[in-house]
Structure formats: structure tokens, C-alpha cells
Length: 167
Image (cartoon, rainbow, N blue to C red; front, top):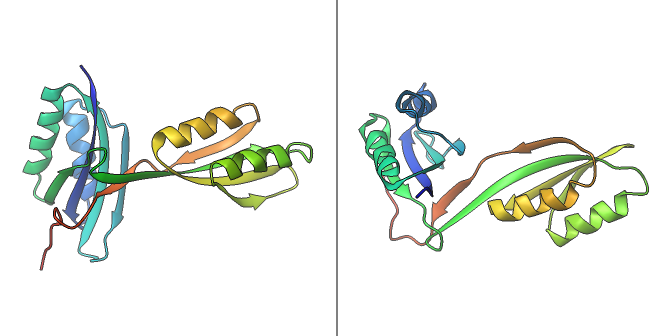
């Protein structure tokens, strides 16, 4: 049975670290649902969030193989309830004058932000769990979606009991 796994990796911020991680997935034939990375408060380190699906054996292999990478300092599985995970999307919709109010109403329901308006389009920014973003896209799919960009999921564990501190 396939299961979805969200992994938070703390890695050294070195050239090629993202390539090493993604290369591991391609060499082993593992699929990546989502991949996001960014420098932490300490510029020596990068936080990488990887979302993958597989059976228990594959998901275990992913963690074992990642742990072997030289740049990987810490790996945490972000489980629902024990973590906070979010994704960001930007959606550009064709927006005629007659559509703007209806689009704005849908955006308000989802607490989305209108970040750009032109004479014929609107760009909407929305953050949240993947299911919320999917529901928003379903609701606005009746309009002409001109462009859509998703960041991929990112997350952190809740509380301070599972924090890796490096001096």
C-alpha cells in the first residue's frame, strides 16, 4: 500500500547539495512528489523538504539512502499532527470586469491575497495545506487559468523537543 511521506532534511549549504539529493532519487528510481529548499537562519545550512510516495520498504530505503549522503545532517519525518506543513501557489486568472467580484469572493473564502491586477487578469496568492490549495484550484477552474505556480510543500515539526542545534 502506498503512503505519502514528508521529510525535512537539514543539510550543509554547499554547492551541489540539492543536486546530490535529487540525484539520489533519480539513480534509485524513486519519485519525488514535491521538493523545496531554502537557507535557514544560519547561512551554513539549508532546509530541504521532500515529499515522496511509496510502500513502506521504498520509504524506508529513501531515508536510509538520504542518511548516507555526506551533506545531510538531520532527517525528520513530518507526520500530520506533529508538524506544520504549508505550500504556496500563485494563480493567474483571466478576469473580465464581470468576473472580478466573483473571483474576489472565492479568494476571500480561502483567505487568499490578490497580488496583481491588470486590465484582463488577476494574480492570486494562497498558502495552506495541499488539500486547501487543490480545493481552491477546483473552484476557480471554471475561469481561464492562464498560469499556475506551486512551491511544493515545506514544513517544520511542532514544539522544541525535536530540534537539531548545531554550534
